[in-house]
Image (tube, rainbow, N blue to C red; front, side, top):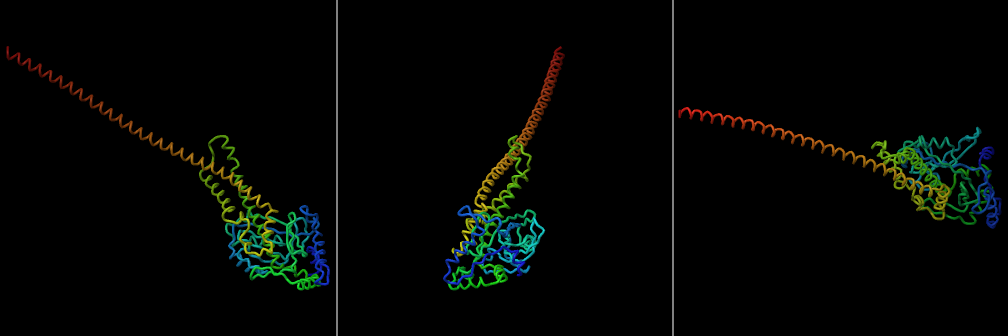
Length: 426
């Protein structure tokens, strides 16, 4: 790298030259002083100097999940190297690095060299890019990984940013305010990827390596910065996992906000009367959407887990759990999950009211249908009874007429017999 290119990168302060082994206290004081160069204040009031040049971390969530085996195949087919630092964390996460690229800031037309960067792809459907230009990151998310996406939502892709600054004088990392201070010092630790342990170098090795680093020119220093050691990458993964969790949570927050926007009028309509202008299909669709959001939050993801499975087997000396928790607190993930669950409870109440009204309406319809059927049956029965009565009345009239006719005929015959008897006597 030439001097112009190096000048565009954030300045990294080098420890002063020292005679090797017996100057550890002086080195420690020098390193502390240099770390304080961009860290202002003390205690809980510490903050990053606004003039310090920071780099950007961006998390993208454009799918519900990624098929991680397909991700590895697609990334490798596109020319990226898988797990360049040999962290052995596949398939929990896919790590690759991007080459340098020119990027243009949104508030300036000046292009500057950006990268190399790190990209971490999680099965949860989230991609976290460290020091990667937006153009390169979006190409990976929307094109390279598109075939591996399950239930993609590129039109409603969620993105979240954090800033970080590298501190070559610190081995551990931390979050100050909203900025990650990434410790990239590698002299006293080595990552053994085979058994997942952190190895400490001897003092002599540390001092020798320290002097060797100090004697390097700007080109070799820049080259060593291009690829962090595995322990630093694991710290990046811890922070990335927390940021991915926050971004995934943001997707669910947006889905719930859209749900509330579509059901905002329901309480008002209920206050005006029992009639609701919603169809059965609408109510079932909203209930299904609510159940989907709740399942993504509490059932089918690690959003509510205190610590992802990714970190259970990591060495405690690396402090990955602490990094993950620090990032979660900085992003208010715990508070947001509680708020989201509270909103889901309220939305569940609305859905319950809708289902109750749906059941009441359906039950009322069945009741009226039964009443109608009974009324029809009663009508048929009344008609039958009336018809039988008329028939009985008609039969009675004919019998009376016939009886009267027969009685009259009988009387006439008796008179005839009486008349004939009188004539015989005479």
